[in-house]
Structure formats: structure tokens, C-alpha cells
Length: 455
Image (cartoon, rainbow, N blue to C red; front, side, top):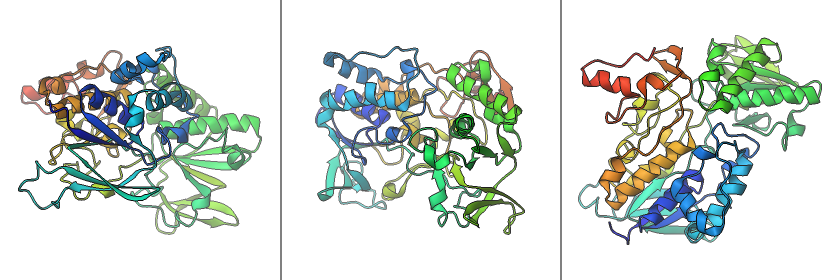
């Protein structure tokens, strides 16, 4: 291990801070570049949201070891924090009361990364050249050189647009004042914007479901509030999740509550609604789906686009990345999380091996490593950066070791076929085969078969 190594970490969210803790524990020097004014800037945008995972899955072990000498009180491992509680009881103490406070540079937005003196096309001497990270802060452009880079910048600030083809819907930019993305606080700080109005929510994931439930509660408080669910697919049941089979009880309960509200007629649903155009309709918003002229339309006062996120790869253009062409995840990780193939809510633990690129010493971790795929668990990111830090330090045995058991979702989907599972997705997590989603899949591949057939 080279204790003099400088490791640049992009993002001071939970995974970025965990990466810094593991790097520091390995005797190396982390430098954390955070675009926002404080650590946990993205989490601060969804403080009202309760996490599906209890505290036991939201505290990194190396980070906890840093916090212990400060007198930090570990939260009840079985209770479920909100985003705000995650900041107050974990992120803020970790960033301000431990040695990590000396490593974090806030208001420092990374704009480009390359190898010192080498462009993307040049190979000779590449592995020995340090990384050159350019970033902007209040004093102007800055340059940092590092031996390795861990990009844990997340995806929160690059949401997917409303258009069903991956592009902004026609007119989406011009209607920006009536469109929000992600999970606005409809019952809190954003209440005045949504109370008493018809609010369309586009999406079928947890963010959309949680927002629609909050809008129903808002309608109980403020008459005239009408939630409308715009569903791109045809089957609303896919949004209900694993129910009682989900080992994360809060996640299973969300789907159960949502199904009941939908059955009771509290939410208006428009299925097979692929948004193509947004336009003004006498001061309201016309949301059209279908052909160029809009074969169908819904009129609302506001639109919330909860269609997921995508990674910002713009500042990585001079690095040699190995990304899946469909979901922008590392190629060895992509088969485990590709929503076109399966959605076992528990992706087996993975680390440096699956997250490596053709640029030695560069890794994408955390939510960004999942590209456009959904359902990322924070603890998965902690296992990723533990392995990455070990790999950078030269401890290949620790890098390859699995030190995590994940909770199951209760629903496994492969090849479009969905089934409930009570104990372990298809026999539990895979151990060796990088592209296997589970143990049964791994066994089948070793026997020369193609897939386990989770159903």
C-alpha cells in the first residue's frame, strides 16, 4: 500500500463520504469535491422523504468508526430516517466533526477530468500519469492532481425528461415554470404550489408513488387537489412492489397503500400515456400523448416528472470508460441491473471488479454507477467504495471479498415474468460470476445454461 496516494472523490453525499472514510482508513489521502455549499447537498433536496431502509443499512461501517470518538450517538438501527434526519444525525456530524472535515471542498463543481499531459487517444505512459481534475469554485478555476478518482456525484441533478423517447417533450423547456422533477415537497415547502390544483405525476417508480400518496393526503387537507397518474406502461400493478414479501417493510407498505388508494378511486389514472408534447391551455398545462398532434391529452395545473435519473457524463469525456450502451452503467454491472431483463430488487453485492473501467484508477460508485437503472440502496454504495478503496490500496483480496448481505424486494422480474419470493432472490446472491443476478443464475451459467428463470 502506498500511503502517499491522493484520491479524488467527487460528491460529498453518503457514498462519497463513505469512500473518504475508507480511503482515510487505508492510510491514503482523500480530497472530496462537493458542488453544493454543504455536504449532502442532493439529500437536502428531498429532506421530507422517508427512506425505505432503516438506519442499519444507512450508516457505513468505516464512517461509524470515525464518528465513535466524537461522542456520536448511533441511531436506532431498526428505525427509518427521513432525508432530513439522515443529514442531521449522520451526514452533518460525519462531515464536520471527524477528520473528514479537512478533506471536503464545498462549492467545488468538477468540470473535466483527464490524465496529466495526455488526451484520451494517447496510451503510452497513461497508467503512470496522474489524474488532472478541473473544478470551479468561488475563486475561479482550480486544478487537482490525484492518483485515483472515485466519482460518487450521483444523478439527482440530471433527471430524465418527460418525453417517452428519452428526449424532452416538445414544449417541455418552454413550460418549465409548471414542471418539476423528482420528489417536490408537495405537503411542505411546496404546498402553496400544489394545493387545490390538478397535479399530474408521470412515472411508475417509488418517487412517483410516494408523491401521488402525498397528493392524496393533500387533497384531504385542501379540497380541489386532484392527483392524476400518468403511466407510460399498461400494468399499474408493477408499481405496487413486493408487499409483505419485501424485507424492507416501509418499501412494501408504500406499494400496498398506493394500490388501495388507486382501487378506491382517489387517484385518476391514465395508462399507456407516453408524453410527447406540453403546451399552454388558457393558463393551464396541456399534456399530450401519442402521435405528433397528440391523440390523447390531459389538462393539469402542474406536472411532476418522476421518471428517474441519468448520469452526467459530460465531464468524463477525456477518460476511457466502459459503459453499457443502453443504461450507461459499467459493463460488468449492467447485466445485474438492466430493467429490460430483470428487476430482482436485491442486486448482489459488487465492488471494484464490476466498477472498473479501461482507465486504471478511475471508478464510478453510488447511484451514478447504476446509470439509468432504478432502485439503488445506499448500503450497496457503501460496499462498492469499501471494495474500491481496498483495490486502490493494493489489497486485492479485500477488494474481491463480499462483506454485505442485502434485504430482498419480494418481487423478482426476469424476461418480463414477475413472481413473489419469500426467501432470497433465486437462491440468494451470486458469489463469483460477475454477470449473474443470483445464485441460481450463477449455477445455471456454470452448467452451460443461459439464465436461471427466476419464475
